[in-house]
Length: 94
Image (cartoon, rainbow, N blue to C red):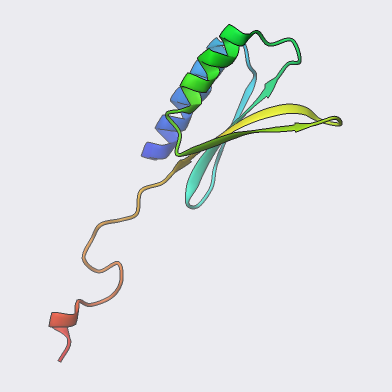
């Protein structure tokens, strides 16, 4: 599992411990965590889950009258730092 996957899994575990069912999905450049938030969610619980998603690179809340409320978090994958990611260095060119 990638480092972002480990971070996302930790976020998901903490959200689950707070009583929220979660989904984790790996993508090419990031890992996402989504959790359905019930209508009857206490202010103390909100503070707890906001503290959890603060560890993500991005997070937000999608709320609709049709689908309820979904809390989401994104953890970006790191970019490789090898020297040949962008091709040869300028000093290597003849």
